[in-house]
Structures are given as structure tokens and as C-alpha cells.
Amino acid sequence: MLSSTISRAFLSSLQIRIAFVVVALVLGGVWAYALLVAERQEHRLQTLLATQQANVLGYVADHIDSVVRLRLESLAMTATTIPVNQLHDREKLVATLAARPILKMLFNSGVILARPDGIGAFADYPILPGRSEIDFSSLDSFQHVLFDGAPAMGQPFRGRFLEKGVVTFAAPIFDGRKEIAAVLIGITTLDEPNFLDLINKGLPQGGGDMVVVAPGQNLFVTGTDPQAFMLRPLPVNDQIRDLFGKIREGFEGSLVSDQIDGIERLISVRRIPTARWVAIARLPTEAAFAPIREQRRFILAGAAALSLLIGSLTILLLRRAMGPLQQAANRLDAMTRGRTPLAPLPEGNRDEVGRLVRSFNRLQARIARDSAALQLTSSVFENTLQGVVIADSHGNIIDVNPSFSDITGYERDEVIGQNPRILNSGRQGPD
Image (cartoon, rainbow, N blue to C red; front, side, top):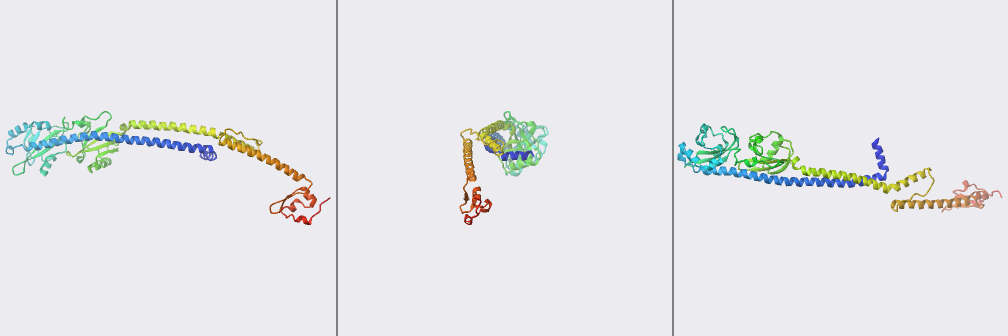
């Protein structure tokens, strides 16, 4: 019922239709522009933040890759200096390892000269009771060395003796026949100050966090909050699988995603090739885009206020401009219904509406003059003593006056539509 009433009012009112069209066009342009500006600004901010985030992450990833390569290269160089003929002299081996200060600096959990089968060690430094008797063959770094004959880094795990997260590096020691006579293993804890400490220092307040992930093990290696990330398994869900599926396929770059923990974040990914790790920087978009979204709310609020102002002004101006036309329409309606006598309409302003009213008033005056003349002619026609015949262009009678009937004896109805030749037969009326 209400909708039909509104529809009738809309269809019957030119003022409402014009106001609606003008306001719709203006506000459509205002809102489209406001949304376009807000969207463009957010996209530009996202690009800027992604670039900054990727640059910081790239620096961290390159640093980690360089310290990993340093350890591999240093261990491989040290392996070439170990005398193969001293492998069964534990004291000399310990002294040789102790004389290499770079080993102590780079491998804070010590170095081990493992036997080629991995069962026990020729020596270790510093000496830890029982460490030289354990089985090293299960270490993936040890297995890679046996398989490839080249230095290798293993994946992180929790150490048996230190109860800390550690990572191992291994390098082969060859005998004269180019066969592996021993494997030099260096152990570094994940919290070593000169290893992963750069990522552990974190980012500025509100800058999000960074994590290092071992995709092959579905494991967090460490992060800006080591207690929260170190050696924790990755969440198991379809979203994580999708994200790390892209990473395993070689993805590097930035994207906006909620695939890690359901919180929408700006995520940048950078590979650490030597370690087969991935560095990931994460920044919640709620914090990242807070300034631009505040600006968007400001723009949209301004657009809303402008919409209200434009709509109100448009309606007021239309009412002012269309007011004389509305008044003229009301007066004409009253005149045509006989509620008021015919009278000139107020002319109002000298605009198109005023011109229309003035033209109507002149037309009304002309009709009045023509009506008066017609009434005079009709009076003469009816009252003259001479017979008068009115014929059309074809010569047929369309009207006669009373005197004609008195003179000819023909009634008006008898001659209308007839040719004037009927008068030739004549019918004499009374003298």
C-alpha cells in the first residue's frame, strides 16, 4: 500500500522525478569517486607496505643465508685440515679441534668427528660425557654428506644434551683413496647470538612479526617471538597446505591472505636457499591499513554529508523554481472544475515558467475576445429578419436561422445536409 502510494506520487510529480534523477546522478558520481579514491589509496598503501616489508625480509633472509653458508664453508675448510692419520688419536684430535677458534665461534654447541658409519665419534670438542658414543647416522646432515659427498646442513631439532633447538652442519673428511674416512659435524643452537638473532630482535611496534619456516618438516624454526614459534609444528589445515603448496612451488613475493591463522594479514615470502628454509613476514591488515581505512571512513562520511547537502539543496531549488508552475497548475485545476472563475494567472519570475504563464494568460484573453465575438455573431444570426444560410465548402447546408424557416417554410432539420438547390422548389411560408 505504501509502496504503491509512493509510486503514484513519483509518477505524477515532475518535481519529484527531476529531483530524484538529479540527486541520483550527482550522488552516484560523488560516491563512485569517493570509493574509487579510497580503493586506489588502499592499493597504493598495500604496494608501499609490501615493498617495505619485502625489503626488510630480504635483508633478514640474506643475512640468515650468509651465516648458514659461512658455517658450511668454514666447516668444509676445517675438514680439509684434519689429518686422517690422527683419526684414532683422540687427544690429538681434541687438540686440533681446540686450536680452531672459528669452530667455537660458529658452533656454540661444539663439533664432533663422527665415524663414517655414524656409530660413535672419534672425538668431540668441547667434550661432553657420553656424546662420542651416540649414533649420528640418523642426522639428515650426516646422511646428506654420505650421499652427496659434500657439506650439508640438517633440519632443526631439539638437542638431546642441551634440551634446546639445534641445527647441525656436516662436512666429509676424505682419505687418500677419496673415500669418506670421517664426518665433521658442527652443532649450533637456534638461539645463538650470531645466528638467527637478527630475526629474534623483532620489528618496530605495530610492524607485525617474522618467522622462519622449514616447509619440508612443516615446522616453525624460529620467529620474532622464539617462545611462541621455535620448533613448533605448523597448523594443519587446508589453508596452510594451500599457502605452503605455493611456497614449495617456488613462490616469492607478497600477498594478502588469512591462510595462516584466520587473521587477514599482509604476507611477504622470501626463500633462504642454502638452508632450504623460508622467511615469512606477517602484518595484520587491520594495523597495516588502519590509517588509510580511517581516511576512507572520513571520505565516506564526507560523501554522506555532501549527499545530504546536495539532496536538500536540489529539493529546495526545485521547489523554488517549480513553485509558480505548481501554483499555476492548482489554479487551472480549480478553474476547470468550476471552483473559481476564469482569471489571469500570476506571472511570477521572468524565466521559462513565467513565459509559459504569460503565454497562457494571452491565450486566455484571446479566447475570451473570440468568444465574445462569436456570441455577437450568433446573436445577429439568430435575430436578423433576413433568411441566412450557412454552407460548407461542398455547398451543403450546415445551418439556417429562424428567419430562413419563416420565409421558406423549411424547418432547420429538413435542410441541414441538403444542397441549396432544394430552395428552387420553394415552400412558401406565411406572409
